[in-house]
Length: 118
Image 1 (cartoon, rainbow, N blue to C red):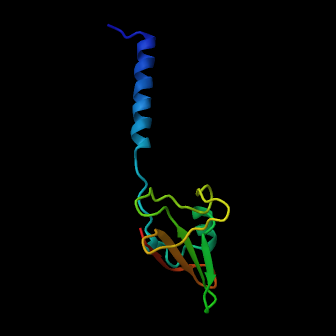
Image 2: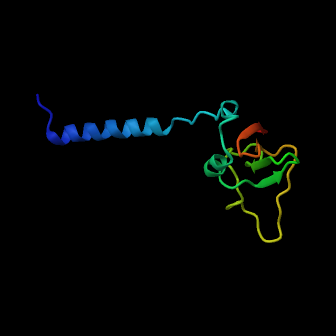
Image 3: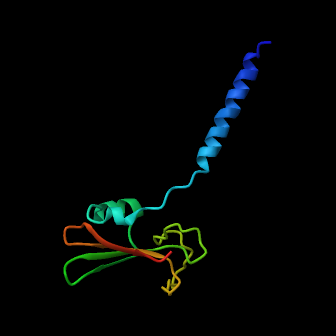
């Protein structure tokens, strides 16, 4: 018995939705920062992660960038100061349990070191 055109279309739609749903559940693998040392640039970091929460110059001319993430127990999404729920006159203090990513760049803007607390 042949399937009607509508039944074939419905079956195809269900299969497409199932594939989209399953692929949407895939997680992104964590970044291998060790492989980026020596090749990842300051510009790439700002493009990928957005503006850092803190930036400081080192005595050797290098730069340290720090991105604060949601507090421990959060989803791990970068918090770059946008829509963070702080009002006028409020500030964000940094504690020992705060989650962050810190990248250190040399004078040429190339990643030399990194650390994270998450």
